[in-house]
Image 1 (cartoon, rainbow, N blue to C red):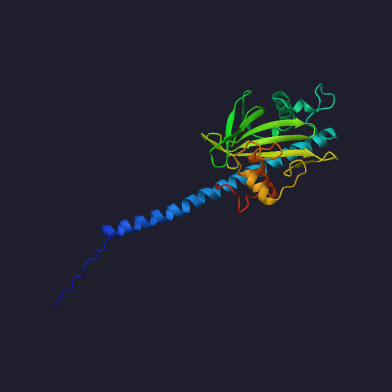
Image 2: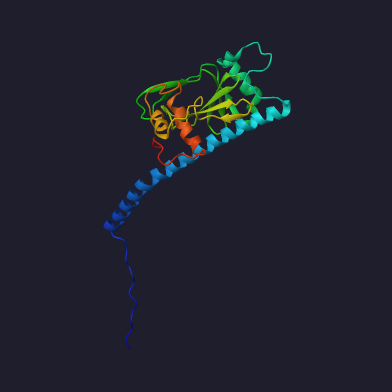
Length: 241
């Protein structure tokens, strides 16, 4: 009687096959990981700007509801006039009185804690933040609150303060708020009522000038592109994220 023995299958990957597989994984990773990081950064910008805007508007509504009066960054009877907002002290007072409770503030920066901001290509310094009241939030974001006058204030947003070079429109943004004639506040992206065309917004966003138009920094124009698009970064946003 013949006895048959089952041969063992000792098939294994060859070194060449392993190297090819590793190479394919490397190529796929090189293509997909940057896209994933970019997608995450875009969502981070959108979510944080939207949340900051919602918190600011909610703070204004609460003041109006509790005082039954129009919100103003210069209080009635204040010893200062409408230009009083151009100071660190006034900006601090307005933020602390009206908005501090809405944000998870973990750090209150001393006066003149400065952060330089660079153009979209990183080549040119286009501004410095920190001349007005700054706070650090629990999520790592830094806000600079600037009470301009009784009908206007700005909030500069630094998303990645730990970076050695803060880039306009990627790490730094500005939200501007203004009151209309009826005392209603809104996020203003038209710059004193001037509605630039879309391409002008894009060009001002990537400008290497400190004030490409209307005494506004490039990162203010970058912010407007996002606000105008419903707090979503446009598909043709001019800065690589």
